[in-house]
Length: 383
Image 1 (cartoon, rainbow, N blue to C red):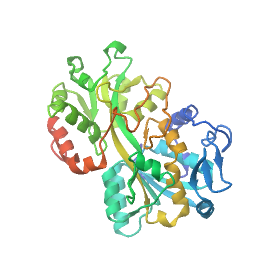
Image 2 (cartoon, rainbow, N blue to C red):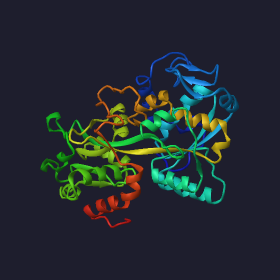
Image 3 (tube, rainbow, N blue to C red):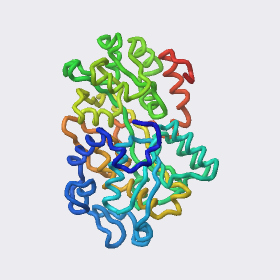
Image 4 (cartoon, helix red, strand yellow):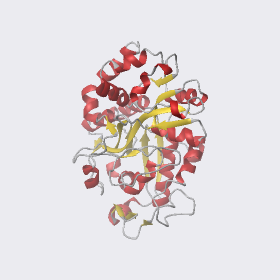
């Protein structure tokens, strides 16, 4: 996916991945009727705008807010997958009539851009989604993000996704598990636990790992916390292949150049839908490693009713259920479990199989975690 901003018309940013995800939408809806033309992204939810915005019986925006937002537009900055965000935006516009312009960058480039804009007093986003929750904390401390209370605040608080007064709210969890190439690895030989990575049969470059970033610290930390400081050095001793990005790692796994991998769950869902021989495994020993993906309403967004409607909508039950079909784990704990054909059921918030590296944990230990991984694999710190 390109690192440059994507503020072009949405049809120009479509990719094969977007087409694949569109097919996924057809089988991951929430039920209900109405809400748009048959087959459109918003057609699987019951939408009412008679008295504010209500979707599947849940209030998203009261009448005053929704009336003020009518005809408005939203500037949305995100470091999440562009094709997925485009589908989400299409669904929102279908249900509300409000347009959204997406600017998608990698975490490093987004942070560079936003720091420059905030420093110059011209933050261009109304709503921000970031896969680095510590960056959201930084912006909150600078008052570039503002607290707001979505109608779902009580449920989000119960689920641990938000704290009253905190402008950074967890919108979903990204997660890592294990994956293998099912044309290279027989089912009986497939890994079932994290410790299976230590099996001698994977030595000699059969394991593939992408160098961990801010979000990747979650799976590194899970290994350290659960199996001790020798775990990753033992994995490193088997001479795994280390990739600079998940996209290159994914291609190598699909081609069978590597057999097994620590892998983003959402990428495994998409790869399988594209026909790649990549099969996801939820480890039986301690589950999956997860990290919060935060959203925030900016100072500009606080003065834009359409932005508040969009932010509320992202945290609604209907939208959270919709996003679960992409291999993300919803922030809310009051949702039905999503089952995809050929995919294991993902663990939910509050279950022991979901091992979350919280924002507080990252604040305390992220540098230590990444340094320990670099040391295990002989990578100079900062290299």
